[in-house]
Image 1 (cartoon, rainbow, N blue to C red):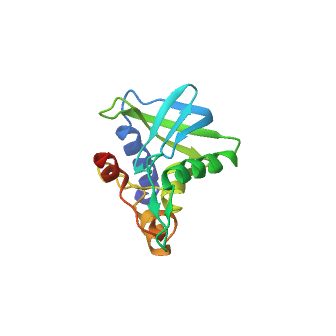
Image 2 (tube, rainbow, N blue to C red):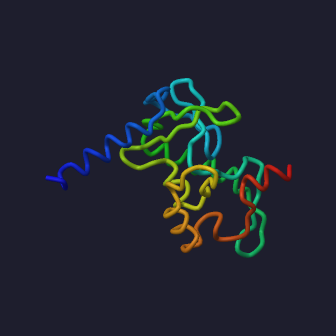
Length: 160
């Protein structure tokens, strides 16, 4: 009996963690950059990860400068184009810059997982660590950013 109650209790605890002002958005997404999209006219900062800024560059394994920020944006656009840009999102309030925070999925796969596992983004250390296993996988496989040298996006922004 207790085993049957565990999934119900987990689902209920998730509902309690969702802010009262949370809302669901479903529709076609337009990519702004590697961690920001627009859905139903609302600009959403995807939670849990940080992608390089559009102007940010990184070094390839052989030391050649490459546009990793632009590549992150292109990769997110490519992922969304496979489903005609249709996503389902849940908002979670705003960050200190008053951007709406959200987690978005394609089917049952989170966009953050796609971005971090591919190496086009890194875990945002000041939020939950949902995508840490994805980052470990990308780092060990030397995918994307992890194939060469890069500055974490928040370090790069601070230096600009």
